[in-house]
Length: 248
Image (tube, rainbow, N blue to C red; front, side, top):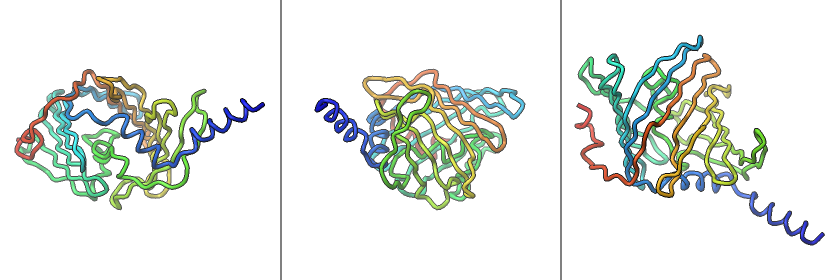
């Protein structure tokens, strides 16, 4: 009987964690990569299930005050050469610039437009840049729930940026490795807008890295998936590689 009670107490102490602490551990599980180079495929599906595939490469440079990323599309020809530069500002307004090769001009993505669709996908500019847990507010303890036969921390986070396209996000985090697995994103009116599934991770040099994300828009019935073909971490990324000059 004593063993049962002790085991119960240990289990309660293990799972009795604040939502913010769980979010922090989740962020730390994928951090520490320094710099990364990835090649990915973006798969767009319309409401009828017709697919459109794109290929892109991404440079990402980790920083204490926010990451910097540089995305360039490689194909098809109608989007080839399109580039996005993002400066994450932790707890503030991210800075983003889009280069459109057809117009040969750089367009600043204003904070009011961060909820807009990124190159006609179901990922918004906000989805692409904001990954730090400090970009959200939390309250209370994380709830431990069972989903698909597995144990998860369930928590609610709210974007601190007033220009966010989301009123709140409900997140399911694996209790074993603290990796985000599922999410539900709600629009400004409190209605469910998107469902996201972080379906695949890989451990590279001791650090968990995401390798597949499926974003479904439940309001327009379209979806977009990002599939990583390759990733290298601890890559030295020059400052000059993630600047506005690199866009042209």
